[in-house]
Image (cartoon, rainbow, N blue to C red; front, side, top):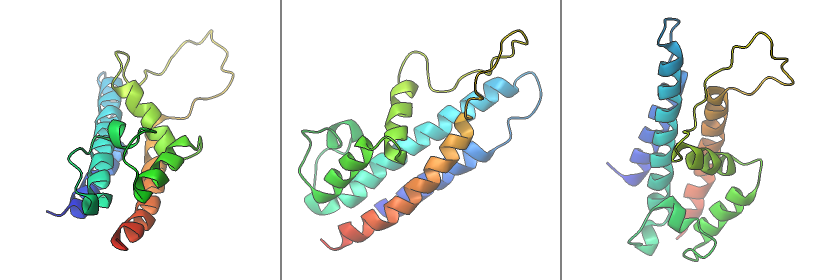
Amino acid sequence: MSAQSRTNQLLYQAELLAMLSAGDDEHATARQMAQEEGALALFELALESLLREVTEHARLSEHAWRILLAEDGVNLAELQRLRDLRAHPESWLHWLVAQLERLHSDDGAARRTAHNPAMIAVASPVNLRKQLLANLQAAKREIGSLRETSLEW
């Protein structure tokens, strides 16, 4: 399987997992949290596959996103473009990196929904599943143009 095929496969699997219904039984919350964190983990694998794909011409020995997307990382146009994207607060990559930091923390990324009738809701939090799906779509759009740039090399 090519790096591009693997990236596509991982993005597709993340999307499938994020779209699954958690059901409505006593395990629904735990199942939803597992699906969200599983989809995030697949999204992380897709990011590393993408990095391998767009840096193939540089023959790098390391493809970990924390290393390649670090400010002092390898100086390649594709990586700089991704670093710039990561720095933009509204980008899918900025969102993904923040979620991956949470995923790797002791608390995890998925959250239980608070059901306290005495609590006044100030704003309804955006569902992690919805954020995941929106950012997967944004990533797929961006990946197309990244691939074009990479192919020019």
